[in-house]
Image (cartoon, rainbow, N blue to C red):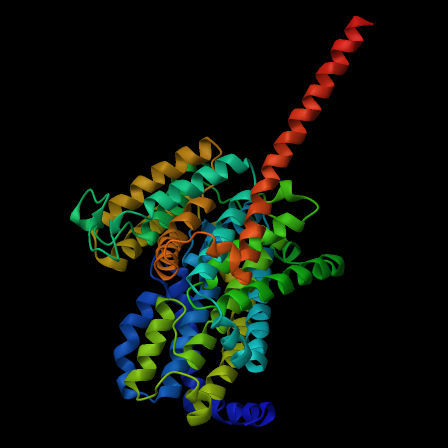
Length: 508
């Protein structure tokens, strides 16, 4: 079946009233879930998976897919307005979106987020349509060595490109890697650094993220003025942007979309990693990298485009290879198997209405989200007119409920509060929180692929430099590590020259 025939079949399938209804229900649920702290698409899809027994495979994937990419939209709302990332992919959104809200540009940030999300999803859908099979074949070239190398590149890149001291960022990355070791060893089943049985499955990423970002922000604003920090009456002015700014941001959206599309198509990476890498790339190529962290729009646009593009292209390995890229895709795989569909290359030929219908429904679902989000921007920003003393207790209650419901563990609640105190201390000492989260998220996957590579290649470390793709990633990692070293050397050399000049002047 050629592309035009597939698109025609996809339109006919996606525009059926029942499929449109499930797409609408999915994106609405996804956005609502994304706004709620700690819930996430994983929990929602897990709860709704039994419903797929009573639905067809196409309807099931359309609804579950809508929840997945709808949560990417919703996660940005809480991140921008309250610095509470509703989803893991929204962690980077806090870095630039929240400062924009603090200076009265909440409406502009939400508008840019919605448009960038739609743009990224559209680019991802086009790439899925044009390159599903080629990208799937390319992904087959990735072994454990390539996955280790690309994850190491993401870790170092996000740390070196982070605003502030590169040494502090790298130290936070290492701390995140160490915290990721807590839990049960996946190979031996042995407990590692487990202080209590509640941490046998490791520290909850949701608890850590909610603590470092959400609770820390609440504690940092204790004693703040009773009025809100945004004037809703100025919203109309704050949402406007010039054509020059639009052209600059469109380039950031393209870069983020391409990064997200490529990484989303690789099994085991996912949209969360794409957001960190796209943010690091924007800061690296920016003429004003020192302004990142204070509300640079391109630092918001690129990650938002990346996470939505990655959420769409994550379906490539799931549908064409039967390899889930992340736990959410694993649930999608389960929904297909429940409905008697065998994932793999045969899906496109044996179930064309499923493949093409689901892909076209992505565009329809993202259109629904865009149409709903833009008019609701004023409503979302109205939340910022609520005084601190009334708003933040509500946020804290929702945050605690969301964290507890994730694993039904009271230990996670205490962990959240503990990381909230740590987040306050990090803010006072100017330690960036994002590298800590990235190290924690990628740490277990990094370790797993390193050990797997060592088993496959008899402990030969040179394999990371002898395999071409892995070598490219490793060389890029070493180049990034050289950046702070070269900068420090230049500062030291410049300091010695100034000192010598001053001493020479005194002698004259």
